[in-house]
Each structure stands twice: as structure tokens, then as C-alpha cells.
Image (cartoon, rainbow, N blue to C red; front, side, top):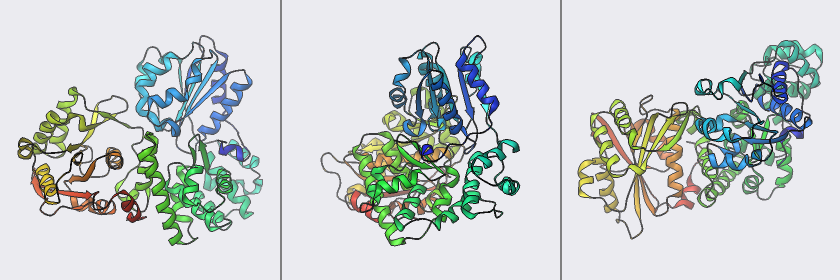
Length: 530
């Protein structure tokens, strides 16, 4: 798949010290770094610098292997597959970009994967956040690690970038006053200045560019394709064909790839985060009815792929799209936790910490019920661990039942209420079962949106899409009034008589019956916004 950056002229200025460090690594020697880590905020120019590193390495005769976090996510097997060729050449350069997408694997990378590379390999990792402190404490990595915090371009280099982009020198001062030294903002500002043949003061360069761009969008199909960017994790040719089946999607895809704010990876195209929200809010028109129809076609494509492809990223694509639309993302998701936490299974040594978290976040009764279910269904607990320490910071349980034992009914009134509802609506046939999301525990933000809750919501939805034989999905919420709009959006409704008081707080049972509203109908009725 072509890199979107190659669809337009690549401009590179400055970064003299960073290039010097990389050239030292390529040259080798006793004091040369083996691992360079670039970190900085979105739009600071990490990917452009990596492309320059790659070009210099190739010119020096190095074999380059590139891994994009957008392609591999947090999956060791995906990184192993993407970097397979790095193990066959002693003079390899391994580049990992978008590292924030797979930061939960730092321990594995540091201790298991990277030490297996050839002796003279050079490694470059780029991401938004610094590496965990354990890298500096590791006696094997500390002497050969060079950390580079990328900052904004100084005025001289920022001006050189504008010149290279064709912006007249008389506009530099006013453009720099609004765009600062952030390379992406400078590139977008240059695009806007050239389109408008001048510069008008703006505090939001991305939105201003999109407003100017909207007047030049060739058709309603192009507008819809732009809005698709706001929600889809990546846009692929297949997704574009599903969204707009009667259009020339090959031409649409090429047009999207050439836009100045678009990046690419093996999985497809995606907009920079700085412009994702502006795309949804600023690029309207083309018919809202047609947009809603496109939205449903996209949902159907992504969910069918999630259910049949067997790829973890296919599930992530579907769940992120569903949760990104409308007010869902603004009211119930933080999108701050990617890379900070890693989802894992329950380990027996976690027990004391999970019980303490349950007691802290909810209370003594909840902790007692958590203890019961850890004894009876430990395999159905998901534990969310800190990327640096691997210690549990949050957890959830999604219990499953083909039938319910008397001891289970006595131990947990919410499971008893779910079983009563299930029996009242026809019971379960052979091969059927129901699930109940029983605990969503994050002591750092009890009952409110948080990075951990982001992951829990995504995992709950993903499990519902892929759980064969599950006919009724229940979930328990200890602040139901706050979460009810989100649950209604997903067609989960309060169960009559399903409220209980636990730890002095109202707990409410919600349900979606997949026998009454099966997946195709659910997709058709899922609104484009709350």
C-alpha cells in the first residue's frame, strides 16, 4: 500500500542533533547507541524523521524493517510477523512507529523480543510518551539507549519549512504566530495559505484548513469519505467500497491519500488526531440521510468482519467505530488510555489486589461477591494492568451461564435477577447461554469514564459480537442514571424488577435479548449518534 506521504512532496528541515545521533548509531563503535527512542506529542514530526532515518540507512547499505503500531496493536504475534525479516541480516535497522499503540508490550519487547535481534542491529522506536523507567534501570539497555524528546521547530527551521512549502516570506510571521513550531500545524497552515492566497488569523489551523478544503470537495461522495475518517480507526479500500458501493472508490481512495493531514499504514489510511474531530464537525453536507445510510453499511461491514475474520484488529475496528460516533465519545470515552494499560487474564496472585479494589471502589458486599466469582469463574475476569509495572489497576467480570446453581443464586442477587428474567422470557435451549457483565471496577474513577473503562466498554462490546450461543446479554451498573443513555444507544434496557441495593447504592440490571433483536436488526437500528 503506498505511503500517503509519498503522494505529496516530502519536506524535511532541521533536526540536526537527532540526525547526528542516528548517524552515530549507524556507524557503531563503543559509545554508539543501539536503541534510539523518539517521543513527543502528535504532529511533532516523528514519522517524518523516521522516513529520513530510513532513507539514510538504505543509502548506507542497511536492511530496513518497519513496524507500524497501527498495524500490529498490542499483539506480540503481530510484531513477530511484521519484524520477521529483522532476524536474517546483521546490519538491520528495525523501526517501530506509532509505539503508543502497543505500549502494553514494553516488558516483552525489552526482555524477550529485542534481545534476540542480530548483534549489530540498530533499533528506533517512536511514540508519544517516554519509555517506562525500567529501560533505564535495565543494565543491558541503559548504556545503549538514547532518548530524544522531540520539541517544536525553532523559528529558523519553522520558517525554512514554510519556504519549502511555498509560503511567501512576507506571510511567515503571521503564520508562525498561529501555527507555532509544530511541524504538522505548519504544514497544514502552509496548505491553507496557498489555497487562500494569504493568511487570516486563526486559532485552529486544522479547522480553518478543513473549512477552506470543504469548498473544494469535488462531490458529496468525497464529503462522506472525509466524514468516515472521523470515526473509522483506519480506512481501507474494502471499507470505502462497503460505504460507497456505487462510487469510483479507487479514485476516492487516491484522493484521500493525497490530503495533507492523512497518514497511512499497512492497514489503510487514517487522519491525524489533531484533525479527526474537526473532520466530523466541520465537513458537513452531501445529505444527512445518505450519510446515515452509509453509516449503516459501514457498521455492517465492520461487524461482519469482526465476527468472521478472527483478527483482533478487526474487532477493535468495529468497536471503535461504534463508540466514536456522535456524543458517545464525548460523554463516555476518554481515549486517553491507549498504551497506558494492557488487558490480561486473571492470575491467582491478583486475588488480594482485586478484592481490595472492589472494596475501595464499591464496598464490602461487592468485594464478597467478587471473591465468590473468582472461586467459581476466574476465567471470565479481565484484568487491566499498568504498562510499566504489570500490576492490576482495574478489572471486570463477564460471567456466563447455561444454568445457574442454587449457591450462585444465593451468593449474588444480580445474577439471581438475570436468571429470573431469563426464565420468564422462555429460558435457554440446548447450546444457549446468557452472559452478565457483573463488575466494572476502576478505583481511580469509580463508576465514571476513565482509560480503564474505555477498554472495558470495548471488550464488552467485542465479546457480545463474537460470543456464539449467547442469546441474552445482561450488564449491571451501580450508577445507572449516568450510564443509561449509552446503554439505550446500544439497545440495552432496564430489566423490570432488576434493581437491588448493594453497599448502600442502587444497582440496576440492563439487558439486550439477541433473540428479539438479532445482530442484523441491531445494526440497522443502531443510531449514528445518541
